[in-house]
Image 1 (cartoon, helix red, strand yellow):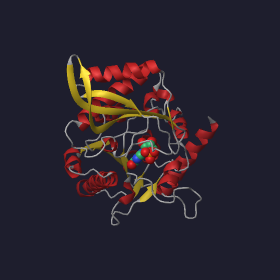
Image 2 (tube, protein in one colour):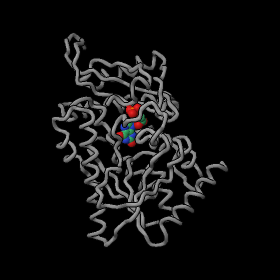
Image 3 (cartoon, protein in one colour):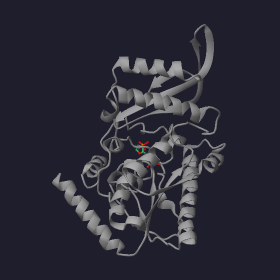
Image 4 (tube, helix red, strand yellow):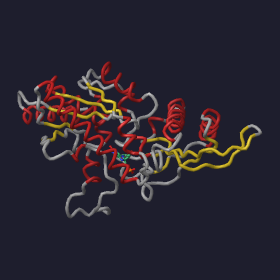
Length: 331
Ligand code: XMP
């Protein structure tokens, strides 16, 4: 693809020019496609002057931290430091149920860890990075901070997006955002170039929000069973999509844990257990979306598998709301 080859060359050249021969850069990898592709680009130019961190905030999916670290180490050959911040994040979330407060708390914890990582580089290695790499895409630019005077319907922030934009002012990084003008499908095309060599399954990963399962366990994330149940349900749903050849046709699919119990009957027993919602949408950039029209048999099989395998769930509902009026995530 000539267009992508050109974009790659231009971006590499720009990074070379802007960063120069000695400066260091820092990058937080989310486990998603965007930050990984951005980091690989920068790594090509900076090599070990790029310092990547991956934070396990306790809000990742089943086995996600291990899988993502394996991809970084063994397939992308990107050196990454993993930091486990889960205890602290969950402690900060205890008792919070307002979606914006939850997002802010998760974002603040992230900034803290990131800050410490940067300080550690300086204190232990005498390295003071002057650049920050971010996988910002064009739609993030528009949705998070519409340009002044823009005719966009939402002139305010719809949700406070979780990123490193809120870094303390004393940590003055210059930003490197090599994907700032691209849409998601273009980022995938870029990653697919032989020079980038990002494995296809990694490129096809659905977007995952920075606050992770924190915005998919509705209400208090630390309520009993929430994260554990959600992880099991989500894994069953995603596996079913992959088995059915549907995963790559869908922009994003996930489960939502509702803090609601309903009455059911399993065997001869009356149960009073959790309700989970499944969401799957098609979209080209996440700004608008439509729910995916599954075949009834698919939904029937997934629902049965979930209720048979996840002890505390006796009801599964499918979200048939487009964006707008719904957002993709429930919080
Ligand atoms: P919404 O729910 O606003 O989501 O329709 C649009 C897209 O953005 C993702 N999302 C986030 N991504 N940090 C991110 O990096 C966030 O805080 C965040 N919140 C939502 C969401 O998963 C969907 O793809």
